[in-house]
Amino acid sequence: MNIQKTPESLVYDYFNFWNNQDLNGLRGIMADNITLSDWEISATGIEDVVSANENIFNNVSNIHANILSLTIGERKIIAELIIDVEEAGENGKINSISLPVIDVIQFNNSESKIKSIRAYRQF
Image 1 (tube, helix red, strand yellow):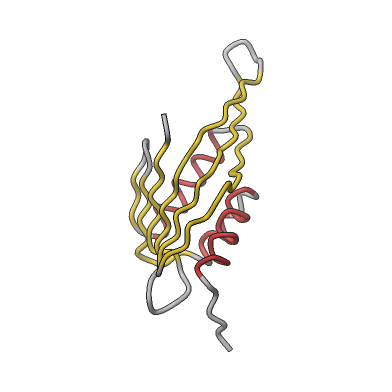
Image 2 (image 1 turned 30 degrees about the vertical axis):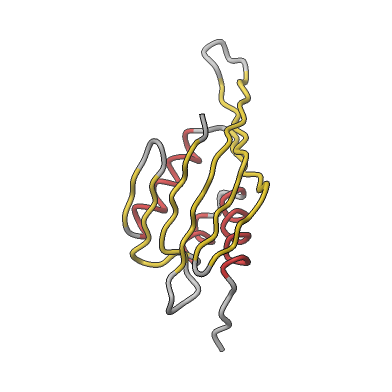
């Protein structure tokens, strides 16, 4: 039996998998033809999108998305986030930054999968 998830529950799953750096979990909720774009990267197709996330996890020592609010539309959710990042600085000191980000997440019509993620950093 295939249980259809709501877009809202998929968004919570997405951020849970993302925060836990669970690439298999992410792969399981993404459509094969997913697209990802943000202020630094663009990727198309599930393998490229999973790889882009893996690169983020490998290049940042600690990263976590905190959901501030969700605006729910038909087949689209806008998530207001704070992305907390810790990176090792040149002197070995840990630098912590918090990035305000808006994610626009769209879903396909035929199955409970994410088809598009567009992330916008607020400067």
